[in-house]
Each structure stands twice: as structure tokens, then as C-alpha cells.
Length: 225
Image (cartoon, rainbow, N blue to C red; front, side, top):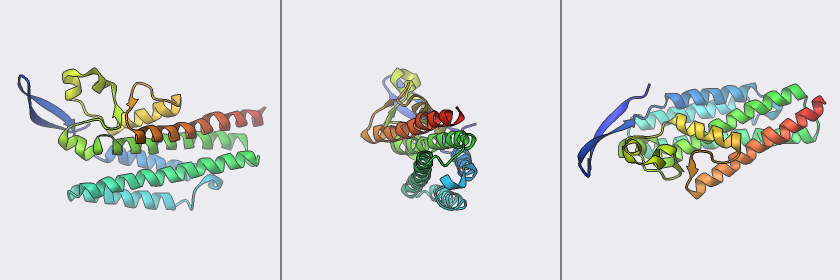
């Protein structure tokens, strides 16, 4: 359940209500928990650093994110969230690189390959969902307090226009869905990428997904055969 904030803004025919989801980090906390679990479950040869490194960094940064948000230091909270996304990206991309190296060395079994590839694909979705969630509309705090003004992504609800677009604001789940579809289709689907930075992020995400799903899966099939 998401809280809603009701604000009035003048319109052409008087005033109307805007419903904006309150900024609540617990859906993000759940996604980060999954990311930490995936990092712990992949083969140790593919993990960047010791198993405790990513949890310590992510938990510490998330605690800073919550603390700075509650103390109204929202720029610091924004930077903490970006740092979480950066740490997660480095961990996932490092693991993808090591996975490709082990494939070239033929130093991995097919069952482990498929398992690790699936977990890395999901981790890739999570970290890029974090990037989109934190960048679009200047971050969740600004989307909540100032209303949603797209800067990086144009969701179908916004493209429809009208009262529905004016009263709608994306949640973390919306950004996670964008990341999922970008990884599955290797391209934008129903949501348009507007900014250069969003397009570059999507390109990196799609390349990683392509390596994991196409190259790695094809190699696994060859090993099985």
C-alpha cells in the first residue's frame, strides 16, 4: 500500500486534486535484499570481492539514505541512492565480466552456468531499476513534493495526457518494470527514453542482458549438447 498526498493546484477551471505517492523506501529495501541474496548465491568465482562486501556497502548506504531523508537532507539522500545504484552496477557488471572469462576458459559447468546467468540477469534488472527510479523527475522526493515532471522517461500514462496524466506519479515498481522490459526486449517498450543519460543506461543494461541471455545461454546449450 502506498500513502497518497493531496495537494491543490490551480487549473483552467478552478482547482483540482493531485494524488502523489508518498516516498516510502521499503519497496526499494525489498529489492536491495533480493540483490544482496543473489550476490551471495552466485558462484564465488563470479563474485566481486568477499561475500560480505556488497551487503555492508548497500546496508550502510541505505541507512544513510533513510537517515538523510528523515532529517530533510534530501540532496544527501539523493547521492546515497545514486551510490547504492553505482555499487550494485559495479558488482553486477564485474560478475558478468568474470562469467564471460570463465566461459572462454571453459571453466564452468552447464547447471551452474544457467543458475548464475539467471541470477545475474535479475540482479541487472534491479540495479538499473534503481538508476531510473533515482534519476527520473529529479528523484522520488522531488516527484512527491513538486509533482512528477518527466526528465528521463515518458511513461504511457504521461503520454496519454489529460487528468489521468496530471494526477499520476510513478513508483519504484514502475521503474523496475521499465528495467525488466528493457532487459527482456533489449530495447524500450511502452516507456520512451528521453534523456541522453537514460539512453546510455539502457544501452549498458541491454548489452549486459544480451551477454547474459544470448552468449551465456548459447554456450550452456553447447556444453549440454
